[in-house]
Image (cartoon, rainbow, N blue to C red):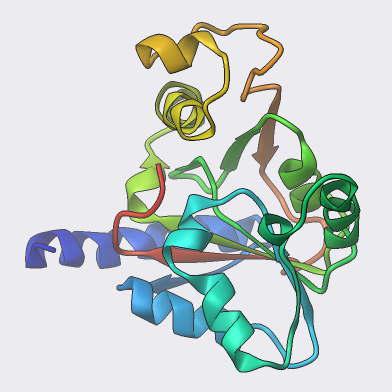
Length: 212
């Protein structure tokens, strides 16, 4: 990464952290993915139950493997179950000690934007797990809330539709149609603008490109 980009991200992150703290969301900046993996692991106490949503960021960082290697955590891994066990794992995740997720976008004033097809991820972000750790690459920061929603629906949704091979108009031409398709990946649009439970939410900003 360019030194100039790294410098910009570090300077810019200070403003984002200030705005997140104002919303009672604890926030830190990690320059690299490696730093972020180490920091996220440090936030999770031995003996904790841990789950995560359908996040490419979490997977690309190989966090599940890192946490499994500790051997002291109970991992609720939805990727390792099938059939009725998938729903059971989703429900168990709602009572996890720690829930890992990313975001589809983050506005400069600190609002976290997510879209969801099934709703399990945004449900867990909203209520249930004792702590939610959001790992967000600086590439997902948008100037305004409107721009953040547009990024989530116009950039993240079509890419994820391709990844999941679902039948939506955006899968076929790469742009949002504000559709009502049965497979719509934008069935739920979630805005986290304030944490009622002080510091239940933690944002780890990462100075590298992560996710879509």
